[in-house]
Image 1 (cartoon, rainbow, N blue to C red):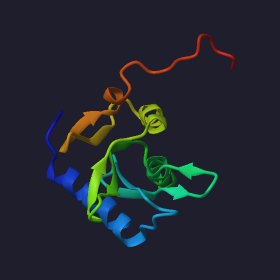
Image 2 (cartoon, helix red, strand yellow; image 1 turned 90 degrees about the horizontal axis):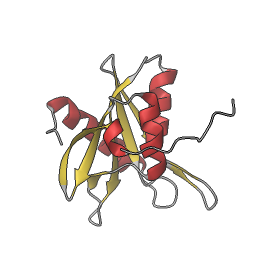
Image 3 (tube, helix red, strand yellow; image 1 turned 135 degrees about the vertical axis):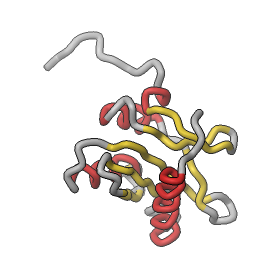
Image 4 (cartoon, rainbow, N blue to C red; image 1 turned 90 degrees about the vertical axis):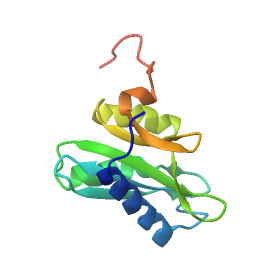
Length: 136
């Protein structure tokens, strides 16, 4: 796991700021921030209802693409700890499959036992699911 850079810390702060501002225990529990290759930061916020949950990471990636980014360089997700302090959280299983589809070299900020660092998106799912054959 690589150490965080100052740009990574800035990204973590951006996600934390969104979460602190918009947190709602019923609807918005996670925020994400993605840095595009241009250097711009795009955020996303989880959406939850009684029936559907949408993660924050794909929304940050979508916002980057909508803004015209060719690719995402780094991404992070944060949630609130029991004291309501934003902490880095790791991508769920769906996001572990989704993020590498937008670049296997995307840097992902993760927490390993409380130690925060960076891995590549390919590290998130070392043995990805694949179809037995194409049906396209």
